[in-house]
Amino acid sequence: MHRLTLAQIARGLAAKDFSSVELSEALLARIEALDPQLNSFISVTAEQARAQAAAADARRAAGENGTLLGAPIAHKDLFCTKDVLTTCASKILHNFKAPYDATVVEKLAAAGAVSLGKLNMDEFAMGSANESSHFGAVKNPWDLTRVPGGSSGGSAAAVAAGLIPAATGTDTGGSIRQPAALTNLTGLKPTYGRVSRWGMIAYASSLDQGGPIARTAEDCALLLGAMAGFDTKDSTCVDAPVDDYLAALNQPLAGLRIGLPKEYFGAGLDARIAEAVLAVVEELKKLGATVKDISLPNMQHAIPAYYVIAPAEASSNLSRFDGVRFGYRCENPVNLEDLYKRSRGEGFGAEVKRRIMVGTYALSAGYYDAYYLKAQKIRRLIKNDFVQAFGEVDVILGPTTPNPAWKLGEKSADPVSAYLEDIYTITANLAGIPGLSMPAGFVDGLPVGVQLLAPYFQEARLLNVAHQYQQVSDWHTRTPAGF
Ligand SMILES: NC(=O)C[C@H](N)C(=O)O
Image (cartoon, rainbow, N blue to C red; front, side, top):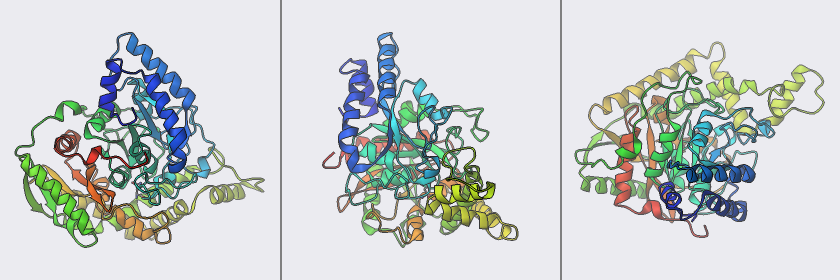
């Protein structure tokens, strides 16, 4: 039962092959038995899950038949969940229970999805390895000595290991796509503004976007359909109609124009990943796609620009964690300043502090123009590169990451080497366009991903291309030994 996709679960529930209660119990038992090896969950909400599953079964018995009704999922631990811990994997929020549900949580619950708990992540979503969590590193089910990627590493590990069929994640610079690539999953970062950020604890507000991580493009389509849509509570959420993502899956690919940016295949890319990605292109050609070499000339500036903008926004967003209003408070403060200093000093981990300091510096008087403003100008150039490229092609294709999953601890002493792993994913966040990663094969037994990028609000196109590829390939059906 633990290998079923959301689409198969929907059919099984409709056919009464099993109930949501039975399925949820089976997965809760797997989480209990197997998650100690992975550390993918921060909270398991078994009692709440049982109640939600029973309610879903009752709704189905009363004649409802939604595709997500009774489907088990779990949320990255930065989506606020009423009366359930929302920690952002930080000591500073280790005891925080939100008084309300995030819009994404609310929408999925309304569709009848059953939440089994909250998933581990990099602290405040800052990282690409899921090693900065206050609750310990997450292990990659494909090799327990390696990282699962980050920051949605718990979401990826739990889905890849068959503890849940799908999960929510968030992506600021690659945090859905990169862990999906490193664990053989399909993950989608929607267009900025497609999914409400209300109740998603902010890291870098102009870049953050929630989205699905699942085993197939079809399941991502199912989840995105429920997650997307206008929300008056998020002023950056766009009031545009939500496409029928499921209906779009079966469009033929004949005539699809794929762009291969030369910058995505240059120095730094593992040659074996390049080979796997180009093999995907060959398959897509057989399905009728045409290929064109393109250039995104400003990509080389993306990492420096991102690692100014994201920390700058983080330094502002994280100023609210002061020991007064939320979460951790230091013992016996002698005065208000001591309370602030020690609560923050003791509550935040090393990577979060590094970024708060970098961001504060970048925004400080006298340096604002040199760093933040310049980074914003680079952002515009990157966006213009995409607009120009999409004048000639329908989708852009390349590797999701330059390397497969690395060993736990391998990059801890050198944060920049981890930042460089975001090279192919960050540009989509800077430009605000949607991006998807899907399985493209294996290198030394480790999964690698191919990334597809599309113009604004063309999530349906990405899901369509990925689904068509998944009809003629079986990478996405492979599962890690031991799980
Ligand atoms: N949050 C993300 O999208 C991951 C990115 N590696 C970062 O640390 O900012």
